[in-house]
Length: 272
Image (tube, rainbow, N blue to C red):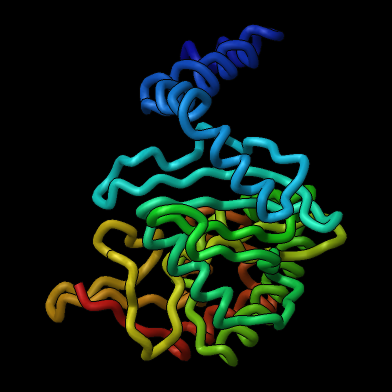
């Protein structure tokens, strides 16, 4: 038995050590702790004031150690909040020098006022929130869990059926999500499936503005000979399911088989 497995069996000790690792050590190592102190001192007041001026209330910082803090090829910054707008709880994403937040705002503008059950629909978009900064506020969906936590075959079937509906609706709009993975496919009990984060999504055949070398997404098909990358949401979903290693018998459900049969039907390429 490994040391980690032994520690897991000790009441209180393992949860405490896990908390210290995730909430203290990793944020210090990644630089998030230092940036968060800088944010509190020099950014938070002006940013929350700007949100209040746009009608947001009850503003709270959300998951600060998942923010982008100027690292990576694009040196982008991204911060999250929760708030209330006109009595509705919302999730706020603010991106500075972040082409994916700019792109996501464009996708939501393209979708327009049409509402979908599988989206946390956008309720407020500001393309000029600050210098080189875009803000998006979406409906806040309570009780979301990643599909990796599914433990019942019936839930798996429901998620697959809901994803088929989402594929149909996105195809009508000619939108390819392009980043289907366990962090972007979520579900809530009695509410169904939600498809999050359209940061690298695109409209088929239209100009693509994201740097796909810096933000490649998770699952795609590389064609190195032609210097292209193909994005296909049905393919990405099945690759995600393979990685999650659900029971083999679940993969024989009708809805999942229908998703596999859609691979190649609606896709597009990105030039590298």
